[in-house]
Image (cartoon, rainbow, N blue to C red; front, side, top):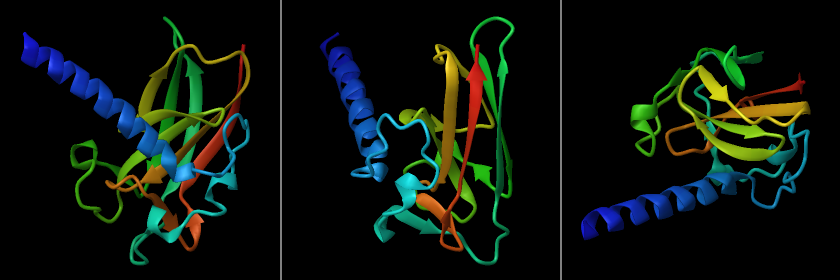
Amino acid sequence: MRNITFLVIGLAAGTYAGTMLDSGVFAGSGHAGSHQMGMTPYENLSDDRKNIWPSDLPTPTLGLDLQPDPASGHNLFVTMDGFQMTPEDVNKAVEPGTGHGHLFVNGENIGRLYADMRHMIDLPKGEVTIHMYLGGNDHKVWVADGQPLFVERTFLIE
């Protein structure tokens, strides 16, 4: 029983630490509390927080849509052309054209995105800005032609 307790404590601490490190990509950007992220968090992104998109691969196109879920909350749909989500490779070597998304609601990091759909509950009423950037397996931002690969859209939640 003692080993299980330590396992649970370790998993919780590791998850917390990972979340704090994960959000560090925007350290010092002043995005907290902002409802419009846009290019702001990327303006001073250091080179050690970037993965350069391979020039021999087409630049991915991204889209977001949010629909009410018939039972509860909302469903976020992400369209990606030219990018492959690879949750099985997170924290492994960076592979061109692969990785995962990092998802933000009203500027707050809510976690990683490993697929093209996510059920979301407890979104605030009013205007809600959803922002997702593409990260490599090392969580660094993919950058193509000097521009970060992200999508952002504002939705009205009633």
